[in-house]
Image: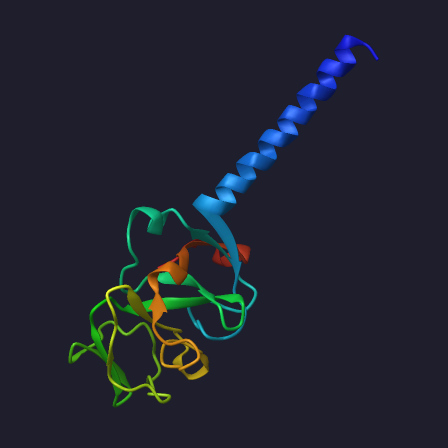
Length: 174
């Protein structure tokens, strides 16, 4: 084998290795792709939509009320997409079809339908916990459920920032 062929092969190996390393770093620390499964975020997000999730957002800051986040659900070993409603050290209550935070009604409430208790009782989040809900509160397993409950900060993977698919809905998420 000639030196030129060896050099070309080595060049390709370096290029491929660099691409794999770069992809690994980006996926591990910067962003990931999330697929919307189920109806819990309707009408904001629909089944089959594809989102870009910024992991970097919460490496340098914390979730804010109203942001759409991806969380790791250890019970079902899958990622869930929800909206941050309650922040650390807040008292949350669901009554009369609405969410109350520290005895004040949530506004905006990010939904057009009533929010039911689903067994949730007035509770206070800890300093590292968040209260998350789906926008489709009727069909959402969220912080009202005793199988999910308040979400620990370390379980929040990142902020959903951009919709990739479908092309007719491509754009920044709000």
